[in-house]
Image (cartoon, rainbow, N blue to C red; front, top):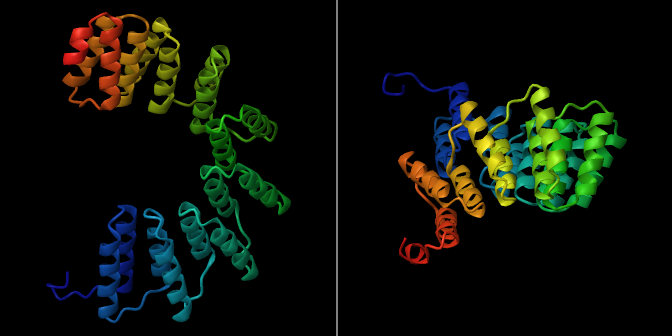
Length: 313
C-alpha cells in the first residue's frame, strides 16, 4: 500500500488493529502497529484506544490496559461506555477484582450507567475465580438498579455453582430462570446434564437432554462427551453405544476426549475387544494418544488379564 504511494489513514490503522485483536495477534505486533501509526503522524482516536484495551483481554495484560487508559486521558480522548466495559473486562479476566469494581464506580461517576454486559463481566470474573458469594452480590446489585439478569448471567452462575458441587444453588438459579421466563441456552443445559449425571441422577439427566432437543437445540460435542462420560463411568455400555451412534449420526467427528471416554467405558464394562477397537479407530483417524489414552488402554488390558501386554504397550 505504502509502496504504491497510498498512505494509510486513521481508519486503515483502526481496521488492521481490530483484525489483529480478533486474531489474537502477539502484543508485540500490536504495539509495533501503533508505533508505526504514530510515526506516520496519526494520533489514536477513541476507537483506537478502545480496541487496544480490548486486545489486552487475551493475555490478561491489565498493566498495559491501565497504561493505555491513562494515555487516552492525557491525550484528551474522553473514555466512553465501551472503554469502561473493555477495561473492566480486562481487570476481571486478570483476577484484579478490586480494580474491576473501581472501574464500575468511576464509570457511574462519569455518567455511564452500567448495563447487563458490565455486570456479566464482573459476575463471570468473580464466579470463575471461585468467589461465588461476591458473584451473587453483583447479581443482587444489578437487580437493585433495575438491570435484569439475562441468560449469560444465569448460565455463568449455574455453571460455576455446578463445578463447586453446590447443587442447591444450581437448582435455585434454574428455577429462577424458568420463573422469569429467561430461555436457557445450550451451555445452561450442558451444565445441568453434567450435574445430574455426575450425581448419578440418570432420569433427571435424560429429562434435561430431552428438554434440550425439544427446545430446538442441537447437542454439541460438550453434550455428547458429558453423556458418554457419565454412562461410561457407570459402566452402562448399551447407553454408551447409543450415545456414540447418535453422535456420529448427528455428524460429529469424535475428538480425543471422546475416544478416551469410550475406551474407558468399554474397559469398565469388561469389553476389552471393543475398547481396543476404539483405540485402533482413534489412531486410524489420525488422532494421537495422550496420557489419558494410555491410562485407559493400560487399564483395559489389565482388566482383561493381559498384564504382560499392558506393561509392554
